[in-house]
Length: 158
View 1 (cartoon, rainbow, N blue to C red):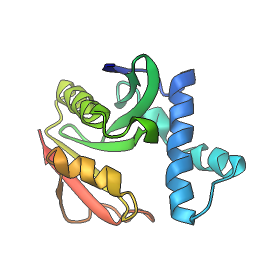
View 2 (cartoon, rainbow, N blue to C red):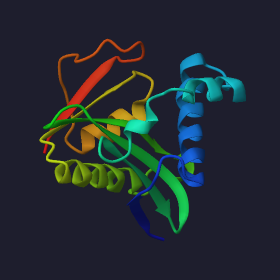
View 3 (cartoon, rainbow, N blue to C red):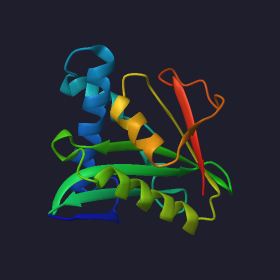
């Protein structure tokens, strides 16, 4: 079985389902209970996803043996800085190498835009994501935003 990672429009059928799965997982963990369909709809409404398309960013979908299994977004901040967002690997596909390939794809997309540094914020409870970022060279940095869910700030020089 092999992974492929390709740019795709965030509104494609696969992109939409992966974004919903992402939001379902992060919201459910945060609230300590399953998120409702209405809560997922509300969380995805006006979430800025339109910036994850050229010329302001990218959205990548990872497929394992052809099945949509992961996604990640890149949002340009300025000419040399981008933010990594909406990184998600479906639980059944974790620990198969897809997360690292997804990050490599995002980093390659960032380089194509001329980006020199990628940053992100994340939460304490997203331990799998924090482990993935650390494994691939993302390091803790001072807070660069005051997002309501930001508890860790990380960056990587490209």
